[in-house]
Amino acid sequence: KAPPDWQKLACALAARSAFSIITGGPGTGKTTTVVKLLAVLQALSLAEAPESGRPGRALRIRLAAPTGKAAARLSESIAG
Image 1 (cartoon, helix red, strand yellow):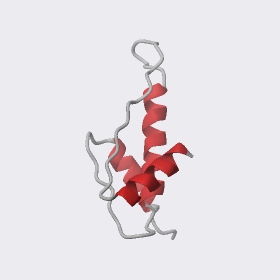
Image 2 (cartoon, helix red, strand yellow; image 1 turned 180 degrees about the vertical axis):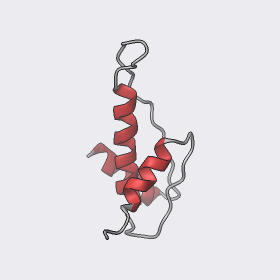
Image 3 (spheres, one colour; image 1 turned 60 degrees about the vertical axis):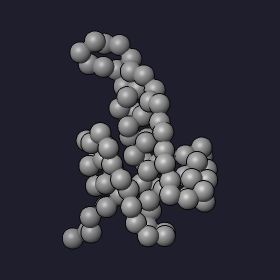
Image 4 (cartoon, helix red, strand yellow; image 1 turned 45 degrees about the vertical axis):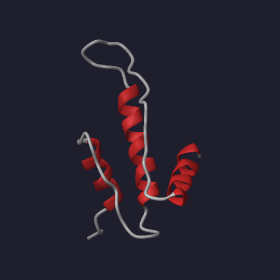
């Protein structure tokens, strides 16, 4: 049996919440998880609203990080 995909699970749970915190030690995939989560949320937001038939809108995203280094890394990853 394959082990669970924790990043996919984290994205699915976070996508259902108004507020989420992604934590973990160095090299655990926090930045990758955030980038994947933002891609999912942006795709959902841009998708056509089924009840109105109108296209969605791009999200306005704000991020916070505990250190300047973490903020720079996160910005770098998202820009890529």
